[in-house]
Image (cartoon, rainbow, N blue to C red; front, side, top):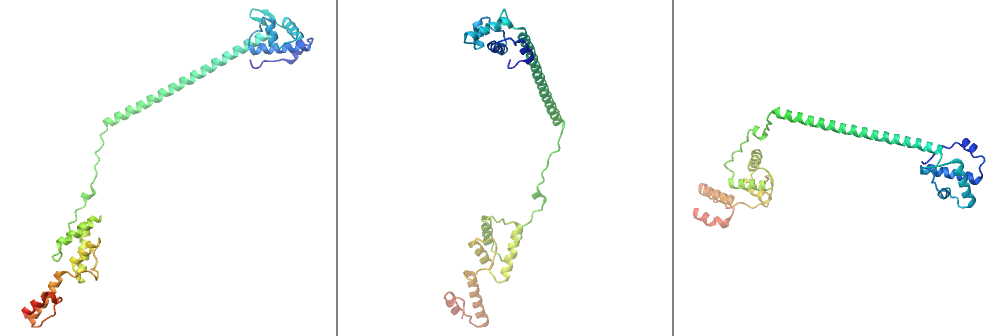
Length: 266
């Protein structure tokens, strides 16, 4: 026991006749009795060691106290008050242990019951869901292809004045630059090319310029663009025809190429 009840009045009345050494021995023997939770040893020498009595007067005080306040019985020196307090303490401790065990058992039982109920509920829910899935026939999911909903746009027909191989090379160059040649895009490019042609630009030269410069669009030929040989031949032929028809010699654009031919015609 860590503590015990001590009635100061009763103790003072019962020990008023004791000497200081006897009073000290009695208090130490009581402390040993309660702390050991057992009677004092039958051997008086052992009791002297418990009371820390080393001198002859101290050992004599221990012997006097034992004979006056304790009774030598089986198991050692007993005292009725100490035995009664120890019995009460043991009974209360046993009740406390039984109560704690009951609480733990009840809590464990409730926890197991709650876990079983939760497991059963989960199993029932899963079984219900599986049965529902087995009897449920969901409608098939159809994905509309938006590209099929729209009617395809046909590519614009190529005009007669357009050189198709050059046009195809221009479209391939655009594709290499990640520019899609959709029918709508081709129609816009042909429109731009027609406007440039009306402004006096050669469509083939415009296309070749965009190919060589890695352009996605079509623009007027720069001033330093080379003159196509087909344009030179057309100019020469026009000058020769004019000279024959009207009897007037027209100076060719390139005298090196047609000077001899002009003399033969004249």
